[in-house]
Image (cartoon, rainbow, N blue to C red):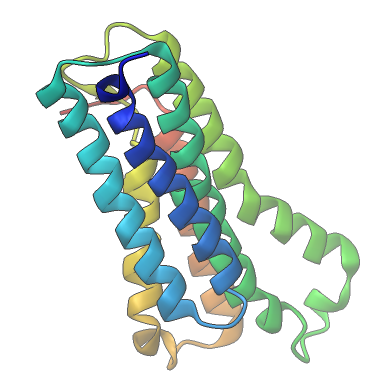
Amino acid sequence: MNFRQHIPNLITLGNLLCGCIALVAANSDIKLSVFFVLLAAILDFFDGLVARMLRVSSPLGKQLDSLADLVSFGLVPAYWLYLTLQPLLFSDSILFQHSVVVSTIELIIFCSVLAGAWRLARFNIDSTQNSFFRGLPIPANGLFWVSIMMSQDIFISIDNHSLIVLFLTLSVAISFLMVSTIRLL
């Protein structure tokens, strides 16, 4: 077994590990969680670069990359959104005291994970996406939500209902862009 061919896979596993740490850190330190998603993005960039430099690639590497990206750029940002909106959902509003409404909102929040999985699976079986992407790549989803988490202070002046609608609308829009077949360079 040639160790050289596994170097990109080790970098990819670093991306996955960063996503796992970011998920756990989100409960207590959102800035640390954001840091680990940013680190995952750097590793995601370098795993492909290193694979091209070493002229090694494998179906295993492609699958590992997708699994790591789903955690780091799909699940973690959805969980951030869940943690951000959860206290707002249980505020004094009568509307959000109904479990059906809350459950529907939680479903909408995690639809981005489903959309990301769909997008990654489609990418893995589509051999035409060598010089372009169809749909928004899932790392863009992760980096978008990184920017939101880093700038939460600007949302303080928005009332709870409007903030919930804004974040859910953004989540649905990005989910749609991930599963779309829009050609992106």
